[in-house]
Length: 430
Image (cartoon, rainbow, N blue to C red; front, side, top):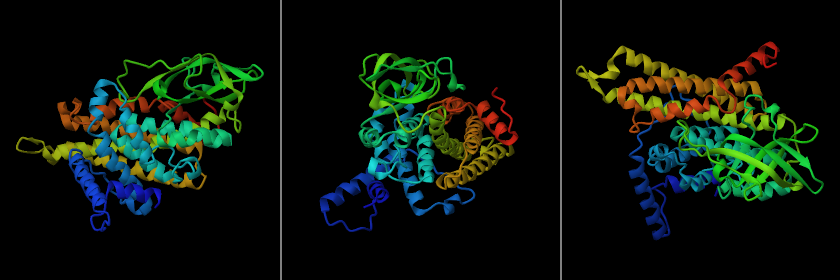
């Protein structure tokens, strides 16, 4: 039984299949009944105005639908409370692993599902439809931790870390941004010094998703020649601490922290051997930004769906507000922008599968889609009026989350300059 079929049978059992084991049949149908009850609280219906589904394979749709139903069952009922409490819901980690949310494109021999890039994107779309913090946990694990170990690591490092990261037994984080070096990561001061039989790591990273409870951190540091190296720092190493960042108004259901290194002894076996230089972490960011491009479509779709349903039900001056021209303008513009983003991102996924997508194309897509989602969230909030700011609806939470997403993994302005440099050949960064 394949990975996808295993998920689908568990998540959406086919009532027409005769079960030989009556106890198993009872358990499955009981599960389905509970699923239906839980999902009834989440009325989300994904828009597909230009029938993009016809461009997806059956496997793509099965994977997406499994993730969508998991979000309805496990994320939607608890995410508002988690956001209000500013707590990451750790109970969802195992489920993220089960639906392929950790490293879905990692080969099966290392614990991944061996899926393609469109499958990865669709999972990110569904997770961020639930919450950007949930997608952040997944995409950091996938693109910023598992990806560099898979692409740049030794065989021993792959076998040690990837299977446990794929199931969620291990959680990872990615240390690139520093207190004084965000958009200019090449200026980092975190460093490693060769001590003969080990390295000494010193420095600090900040704004790190998953840091407070990560078991392993992929950290980028300069060696004595000024060359950037990838270092695997493990929980429990002396001198390694991960203080949590508090007081956030955005990504409140995501754990954010710092990575602090005070003469941390790093075994030489913990250095990623197969790539160094700034291109190594930037290659990881390409994968993560691609995931964001898909994820923010999910956020926009959720805001649109919420606003559309509300506009049909909200009566003012004796008729639904959906009948008024200005509300129709808002909703029509929302679905137009979502549709454009869907096709842009789908095409990027095809290019990624073919190994032809450029970093500049990924930057354009990330920038466009986050901006699109944030504008839709703001318009959707206006459709709901005062109700739009309450936790009864998801819109304000999405809006706050997107204020982080538009900044991390390349700011809105930096991605604009990447496109500018690509089309003009002129570097505006220096």
